[in-house]
Image (cartoon, rainbow, N blue to C red):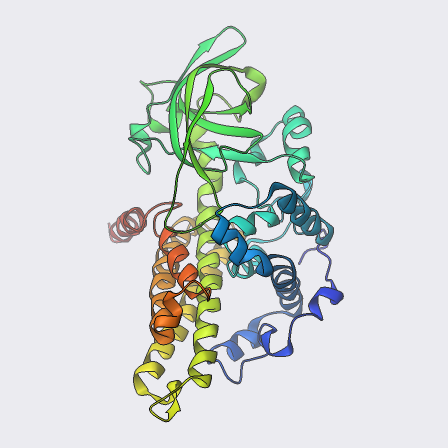
Length: 418
């Protein structure tokens, strides 16, 4: 980690992690991890231990309760955010000049992988910020970003609409220029935390005749803006407790001071976060899959069927072997993407797509195998296996569907042979 990093290694938390559960301490029993240990610098191992300790100490005990209630108590979430701030983890993906620790993408993947071991709603305690906030001007940093970094406020990012998801050309939310600002109308759906956020960043069309790169503008709407109405909160198959909401915009006035970036440059503002977000999802999926895999491997050693351990059956060994290889492959894809991003290599965009595509689909396969190894017990809510299985499915859709990643990768392959 760089000299600007202020993440604190908390030995009192680290000591609460059983030795067998320390990252890379079980390399003798789980294939593939030992070679990663040799390549992981001591600082990143300590960073991993810090985040693992935070997850196991503060978040894991709440997972079943939150999943059953489909809700995180606001006071509890605020307390968790404060604990993350004490460790220097809150807003970990922000640069030093914006109040963050200035971690590299490679270091951020370590955090994302460990955060992937907990549930979606509880992972919000770590406070990963929108990359688009790097476009805040000095005034916006004071009234928007600084309170966010202090965990005093929250923010949502609204792109998806009823008739537009990955296809930005189909956006129907419009903003027209008026004296002193903009008037925006339209609707958004499937927006994370929209019903509780203090501010919502909205992507709107401001020039219907321009090319996509000049058509959009990013606007900041405070909670309570006149004409901003929440229309529903969605019930989901997974990610319980992580709210996705829909809202309408009816002639909402947004002053010029609340334009994020420059008018007409919304596409650029949005793209500042897309590739990093895909890398984040890839690493989360590695963590989620690893958690399910480790439970399945331990269960296979302990459970006996037909007079011998479940793990002695070749079919189970094959399932574990496939999961081990896929997790390792996904981790390496994410690592390669992070290294390209840190180097400023233009290949980062496609590398992030590769990592997101493979890791999100890998998590589905690994959690499915884990449930099969547990049998009926895995399908019950007594164990977290079925939650891992449910939660994994959403990652193939969010931050660009698998199909969109394939389109981008396929086009890049063809272009490379032009």
